[in-house]
Image (cartoon, rainbow, N blue to C red; front, side, top):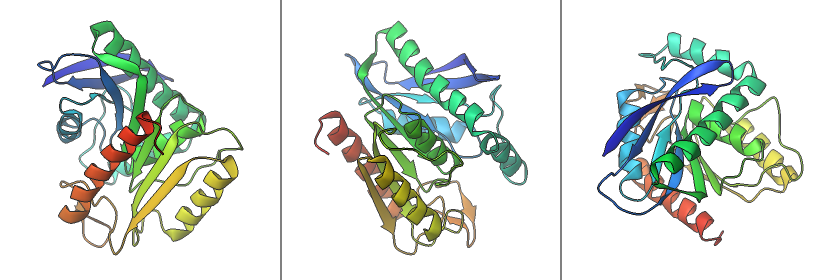
Length: 243
């Protein structure tokens, strides 16, 4: 797999993202924007993007903090995340910049099919792909995995162009059922094409092996296996206009 660091302007910071693709595979591939969790563009996030990309996608891991800032965990990770969430306008500029950079860099290398774009986000990143959808971005699909569902700038009728898939844990204490209910109402009000799936009894971050905060965020192998398979099916169906 080719792994290339890319610097780009993202709102008021310089993003240090990573473009990942199988350089042994030929042809132009769909583009997959990967928004990592609150730890930032870590080696684990890059490895996960590479696994998701395989020979099917060109993936871009986006930097929401700027300068490639990463964290080992709380409390610093919470402070970094909240600094972005506190300014939704700036946050949206950063995620849109990541999308545009992915397209430009893939086109520059002749490896991307810009007519087929999708975004997937984990936890904090899940909230970021929802914000991307709320901007009306030209992506076929966004997939939010155990994400931050609340926003201070809800979508209005007609705002969301992407198909939206939210995969969540029924007992996620970070984004409880009240947040899921509010998101459902928002997506219905926006007239979005959306789906939501709850894994019974699962907590936060169930698809990320490195995450373990007992009673809050716990990996679950079965739910993770199903999640990665379903998100790929959803994205492919969105590309093929089957949703």
